Each structure stands twice: as structure tokens, then as C-alpha cells.
Amino acid sequence: MENTRKPDTLVFFGSFDPPHCGHAALLRAAAQRIRPARILLIPAYLAPFKTSHSAPAADRLDMLRCGLLPLLPKRWRRIAKIDTRELSSRRRVYTVETLKKIQAQHPDWILHCIVGSDSAKAWPRWRAPQRLAQLARWWTAARPGASLRRIPRNFSLIRRPMPDISSTDIRADLAAGLDASRRLHPSSSSLIAKKGLYGTDLLLGIKRGLKPRRFAHTLAVRALAEALAKRWGEDIRRASLAALLHDCGLMIAEKDLAAYARKHRLPVPSLAHIIRRQPRLLHAWVGADLARRRFGCRDKAVLDAVRRHTLGAPRMSRLDLLLYVADTVSLDRDHPQAAHLRRRAFQDLDAAFAACLSAKLSDALQRHAWLHPISLRLWNRLHAPRS
Ligand SMILES: [Fe+2]
Ligand SMILES: [Fe+2]
Image (cartoon, rainbow, N blue to C red; front, side, top):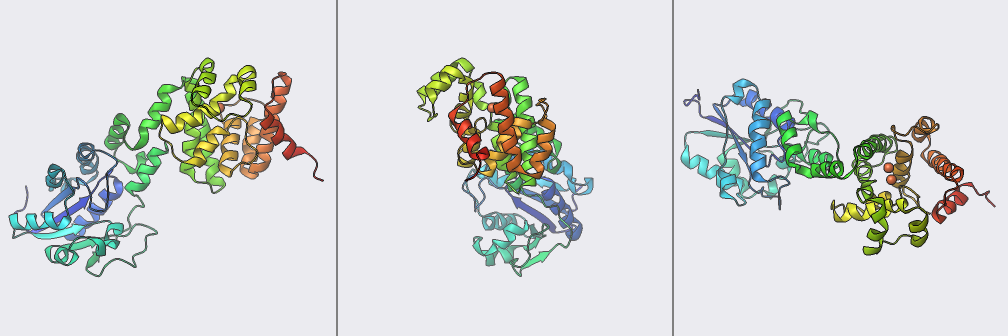
């Protein structure tokens, strides 16, 4: 039962987009320090520094209920309540407004507000900071690697080690198809997956659109592309996204690829030859176009990598090379050189790319297949003796 004689009230404002283990750790540490009689979690309908939230308010509220409260020890969970006044207002509400209302309703309460260190650093930009400082005592804690230099003087610091978790990183990871489950309560993870929040609809969309074997290949390419990105200092999320999208062109039946390329006027070199000799090659161009139109990818580097993953290009970025190699020697590939080239890719990416190109061309020659001029030009550039 709530101890009504004790006035200390811990208030946690946030977007909770999504709520995660870092929120729970901060709340737990603050509660242990302050020993409040009650805890109020106040999710924002629209946080003052944001123009929109990624997940709808109702889903953020559900995740707070089923994904944050269960992360708290029973002792704090018993006295924690989700206060939906800001959500119900369906508008941007400034913290000072809410605190004034709480104070008017409960003049005997001593309010303690807890915020993450990033929000604390933005204190000068908060509305009415002086009034806020009068209304409540302010607390924060630092995440690993986060500097404490710009934390305002009116904040008290909770000196407890905090996990390095942020909603921003979680959203970015989920959008890139990376696993964020260790930073979330399982109920939040399943709600996110079920509703396709934070771009997880991309993974579902790819899964639904591809045949099971092609989807398994996509996941294998993604795993290798992420590992190679880590090895070569490339953006892991970008590599992951490019890998996830790389074969989305195969959602279009092979017989329809040419019609798609013509309809959308895709700039495919030697289009007529490809259509006659190897229409399946079109999936790279069609894939880049689908990635933009259907899956909303606006990252030019990712779209280029998707477009170049089968034939390469005269000039290739490291992301292009990485995806080309990951696609050629992913774990599901069983050609004789795959394992060797996979290892090689971690030692020398350029050499692995040249070897992958060579393996692909040898295979095509053995099958008496048509060779695209782009592949031939690449071969000549990589293997012609230097003058
Ligand atoms: Fe492909
Ligand atoms: Fe592929």
C-alpha cells in the first residue's frame, strides 16, 4: 500500500520510444537513492524537443505497462503508476505545465524528477528552467562514455554505473534488422515485432516477399555483411540494411523483371542484351528501385550497393565491395572456394572482391554464359598488367 505520510515522489518523464532496460536501471538507481513513497511514469504525447515519435502513443503506453514495469524490482513496481495525463491531452505538453498541475493537486508532495543525461544537458533549452528547478529536485545519471561536463548545477548525480542503452540506438538497430532483444523486455520485443514498429516491418516485408530459401540466403548475407562491416570500420547498420534489401528485386518474378525495368525506365546498361541473355541480372536494378519505392530506403549508398551487388561497377565504395563479397560467399553458398574467400574477406577485402569476381566469371565461362560488359571491364581493370 502507498505510504501517504511520506511526501517524496519520483517522477520519470520520457518519450519511452521504446522503453528499455536502461530506463529501468535509471529508475531503479534513483528509487534506491531517493526511496520515494510513489513513482510516476509520465509518457509524453509529443516530447517538447521532438516533431514526432516513431511509435504511436498507444503502443508506447502498452510497452510501458508490459515492458518497463516488469523490469522493476517488486518493491518499486508496487508503488509505480503510469500517469497518462500528457498522452490524454493529445498535444505537446511542457514539463513545467505538468509539474505545476501535480503540485496544485498534491501540495504536500516533494517532487524528484529523473531524466537521462542527454536531456539534462539540454536543460537550458527547456521551457522555464528556473520554475522547473523550484518545482522539483532534479536527478540524472551518466551512461558509459557520456561526458558529465555540461550537466547543469541544479542536477544531483546518481553515481551508479548505467548500461549504455538508448532508445535512439535501439530504433536504428531495429530499422536495420539488428537484434535489440537484450535491451528490451521480451513483451516489448514481441509487441514491436507484431506491430512492425521501428521499421521491423521491413524485415517482415522482405520475409513475406521472398521465397523461404531466398530469405534464408538474405539473412546469411546480412550476417556476413555485418561482420565484414565491423572488421573494416564500415557502418554496420548500413551494411545490414543493404544486405537485407539486396535481393528484394527477386520479389518480382523473373519473367516480369524486364517489364518492370522498362516501365520504371531503370538506367540499366546493355538492357536489351540483359533481357535477351540473362534477365535475372535485372533483379539488382529492380531491387534498388523497390528498396526506394516500396521499402522507403533513401540512403543512396545503400541503394548503390544493392544495384551493384551482382555485377559490380567501374567504381565501387567499400560498402559495395562488402555486399558483393558477402553475397558471393555467404554461409549458405556451397561452392568450393566459398569458405576460403570468406576468410580472405576478413584479411584483404579488395583481394577477396577480385577473387569473387574471378570465381563468378570462371563459373559463367564454364556454363558458356553471356558476360556483361561491366563485369568484363572490371576484370580488365583488376587483372590487366599495369603499363
Ligand atoms: Fe542477388
Ligand atoms: Fe543474393
